[in-house]
Image: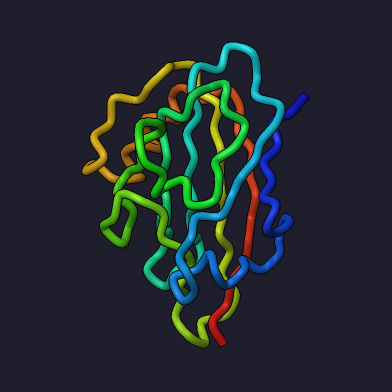
Amino acid sequence: MAMSLISPVFAEGERMPEKFTRLGENLMPPLKWTGVPEGTKSLALVIEDPDAPSGLFRHCGVFNIPADWTELAQSADTAPGGGPRFSRNDFGNARYDGPQPPKGHGVHRYVIRLAALDVPSLPVPEAAGIEAMWDAARGHTLSEARLTATYEVR
C-alpha cells in the first residue's frame, strides 16, 4: 500500500481555505496520512511554493514526527509540550506560515510532502532552516506522499 496524504479542509488541487493563509488566521491546516511503510522510525514534512517570484519558497518544515502518528492537527505548530520540531521557514519563523502570494501574481501551488524515514530523528538545528532539514531527510526516505493546494490573491 502506498503512502497517502490528505487534509479534511481541502482536496488535492483545491484552493487553500482563507483561514489557513497569512491573509486569514494563518492556521496550520490539519493533515492525515495512511500507508506508512514498515521500518519507518520517524516522519518529516515540508510545505513549499514552487511558484514564488524568487523561486522555491518554504512555508513549513516539520521533523522528528513519531512514526506511529497518523496526523498533524490544525495549528500543530502552536501546540504546547513536546513533539515534532519545526525548522525555520523562509519567513524566518520556526512554525507554519501560510500562503501569501503577491497580488495579481496568479495561482500558486502549495506542495505538501510527507516522508517516511528510516531514522528516529534528524540531527538538524531549527536555525538551519527547512532546506537543510529536507536535505537530511532525503537520504533516509523510505516513501513519500504529496498533497497540493492552490491559492491566489486577486
